[in-house]
Amino acid sequence: MRTPFTLFGRNKGFTLVEMAIVLVIVGFLISAFLVPLAAQKDLKDYSETRRLLEVYKEALMGYALTNRHLPCPDITNDGVEDFNVGTGDCSVAEGNLPWATLSLPDTDAWEQTFIYRVTPTFSDRNPLFNLSTTGALRICNQAACTSPRLTDAAIAIIVSRGKNRGVCSTLPSLPACADERANDNIDNDFVSHEPTARTTLNPNGEYDDIVVWLSGNVLMNRMVAAGQLP
Image 1: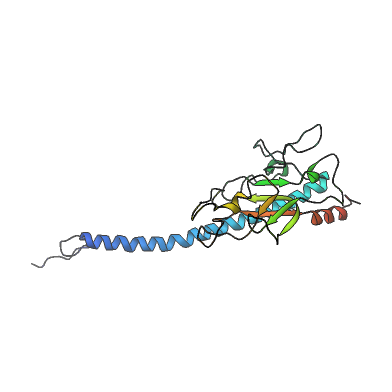
Image 2: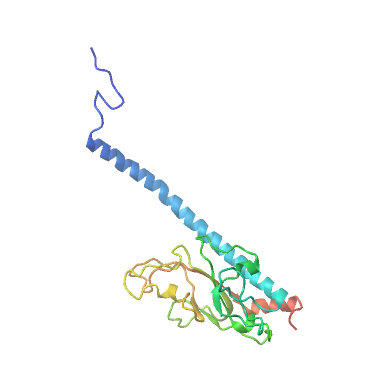
């Protein structure tokens, strides 16, 4: 009698070699499918965070138009700006973005709060800023902050720490991550540029922060147009 043909051959299963080949092929197929999906998600997250940062920038201008000053940073992690009620001065110049005060979402696409720094003369309640008040925040192309810079007079800055959530790799060698560290070292200098990977071609290492800033000229033009400044 003729031996019936089965799914796995003539009464035989896959050999170990055949199973290994099948698993390798399946692995390649899964990888080819997942990598584009991961890249698409990264693009979506960056796009959504950039959009949200622009919304926050508009919200800062709206707050200033209503209150004649910018909000203070949040340092108690409740989303509400923190300031001295007696003097009207901010408790600090840098902290978390006061999302509750601005009635907006509290985190970026990676569920991290935003860094927010403001020039004190633009957030103080007494005295209020005027047309001669200038910003003091610098946006640089790299941590050394040499010329040319993107601006020397921003009045407020918002930073998303990006996909790595501010925990960048120190590869290939120290002092890599200098550009990211410039954005969380609590001073007036910040770095903004396109993302870079941790390779020897990038002396300051990995960088994926997203930075937006508020121009004093843009804010004052809005306030003059609204009759809030002479």
